[in-house]
Image (cartoon, rainbow, N blue to C red; front, top):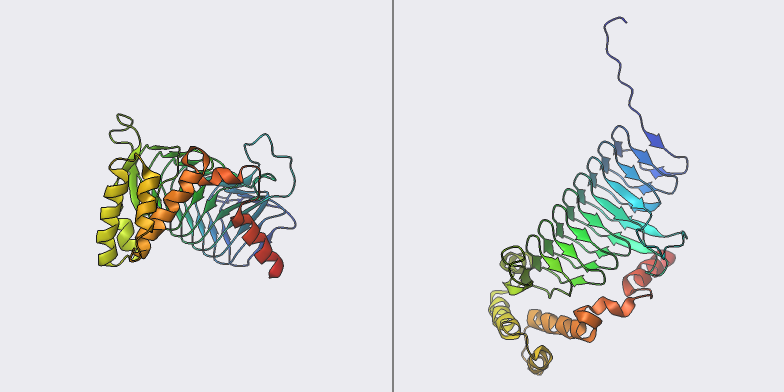
Length: 290
């Protein structure tokens, strides 16, 4: 040896992968042949991107992430299905996300400007919209939708076919087995010492959503009226929707509740069990049109 150091950076990038010239790829990464990665995206160390995975631009994907793996669903038959990730997302270390299944619409999708913290998991056929925060060790089972602006604190577990409403928040270590209405704070107080329930509005979410002050006051009153005692919720929602001057944010809340009540177990997306959900239809129709 002559005293000089020599470092060999090992990467495995399969033929057929479409990677923009300015993508930064760390050591020990593995990228499969059906992967597409857009401009200015950065992969840390030991990142695996496999399957039919499409990643947009300006994403940060940190060490140890595994994206596009086979779903943990025994009904999956191995046909071409996809994981699609948009732009400007930040994926913390060891985040995992699977491709979709044939029965669920063949698509798992993560939108734009999301933060998925360390160890978060997005299972098959999930749809994460935009500007969400998915906290450390949050586990999303299959067929879930997380709407724009939602916040899931650390170690939240979400049942399959559940919807997390826009600009809502789920508190730490809360089990979620039914839909969480938009703009609300849903939590299991004291870490399982009381059942998970709606504890009020998500104040920061209202601010982020840009809800006008007059609607904020109306929304607080609506949440108190609807959820202080959830008995006869359908009747209370119907009464509110009869009002001609109902603020838009309150109308969104009420219509979301009606959808949840119509679904089995308080989960609207149960209606899509074994069917192609509208998000997948819209995505593939748009792709064909483009």
